[in-house]
Length: 223
Image 1 (cartoon, rainbow, N blue to C red):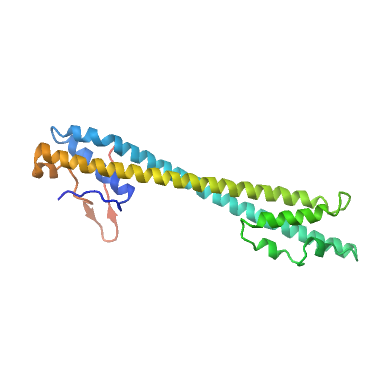
Image 2: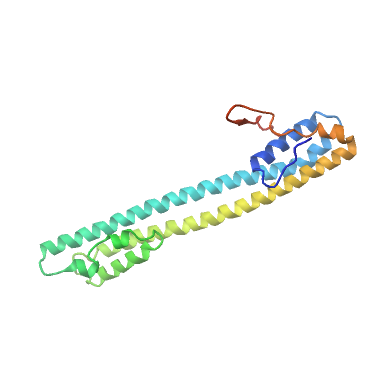
């Protein structure tokens, strides 16, 4: 019996069976109309799948940027911490480090969730600014704010990329359902036109063959 598409089938399987169905219809006199009926749904799903791939790549790239900006932010915090320690060594009695880092360590900040860290770093910047514009360490506040801004920008881009990917996946799912419906309609129409036995010849019987460890599919057919 012809293989019907199922909801749980992947997009690749939807396209594979549909491409092969089109090819069989074009080889059978009188069945060309069935090929024409399903082509728009095939092309739409192929387009949606490609869009999903692009959105997935964009999301992965945005995630990479978040990781990089987080590392840069961590390094900036560590640098400020070391500068404060150095300042205290050179200026006995100033005790700047506990004023800027109340817990006298930077890990309470750098080990935070990367989405929470920017806010904590901004507090460090505020403490540095409170030293006054004439203090030698005052300029470090701007460095922290620059890295914080870069981190927040990367995080926002990731959120947008995640939302775009989710939308693309939803559109792909809808396109897959539309193709599945047209595939079924084609089967019913084929039975009306040609009868069950002839109609079966217009639909592929699933994967044609398998190797020992992998399932192989024929190349897609351009329509």
